[in-house]
Amino acid sequence: MTMLEAVTEVVEPGPSGRAWWRRPWPMAGLSMALLLVLGVMAFAVFEPIQVLPRIRLAPGFSLTDQNGMTLTSEDLRGEVVVYTFTYDNCLEPCDSPESTMAELAERINEVDMGATAVRFVTISFDPARDDTSVLAQRAARFGANGTDWLYAAPQADQVRNVVGAGFKTWFEERDDGSFSFDPALILVDGWGIVRGEYRYQTLAADGDRILRHIGILGEELRNSHGANSIAYEAAHFFLCYP
Image 1 (cartoon, one colour):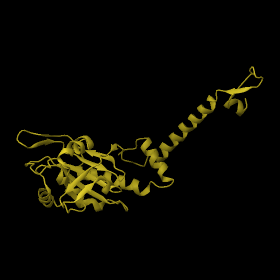
Image 2 (cartoon, rainbow, N blue to C red):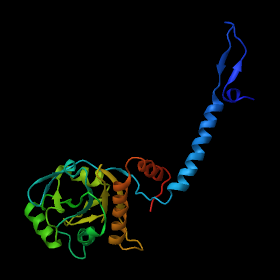
Image 3 (tube, rainbow, N blue to C red):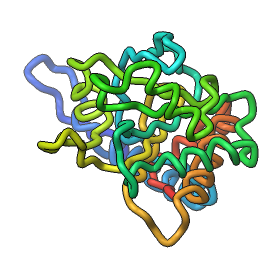
């Protein structure tokens, strides 16, 4: 059988007197087999590359920070951002992971991010009480400098859209005005895509684990250009996650 015969099937002349071709499925099967072989080869070659998953889009928002300035999600495009959530009236022992944020902000220079900036944003879900002055005081208490690490709050009618529905972080006000809440940290890349969610302690300290993940994201941002982008897309396709 010739190559042409392997690719298509000749059918006897029809009423018009002309032969016609049908069922090019052998070519489709050959293509699928080739893609499968290439996929396996790509996985074998690219497996050493690790990537963080692309979980979902982070929400758009407009916040007011501790400096009284408006901070929007668009202001942070092109930057890697770590978000956490709290409220000022959180009494000790407070579940808020701000100490982990402080550690990340202090140690971020350990990570090679190339030209990509890393910012930290702590969002209050109690804007009725956490006005600009309260946010500024809490920011000072944890060492947030108002530039690389910001404290901010949405408008009261936007809290559930931003924190609850947008960042998928649960909180609920108790009868006494305090809150139960999910002590989460959320890692978002420069395209506004959530790349990491940290909600529970693991065997590795949260700070070490998140810094390692930020480093993996930084490596992808530095290297996934030109031909290398194919390798990184293959790593995403084959779920090469840390």
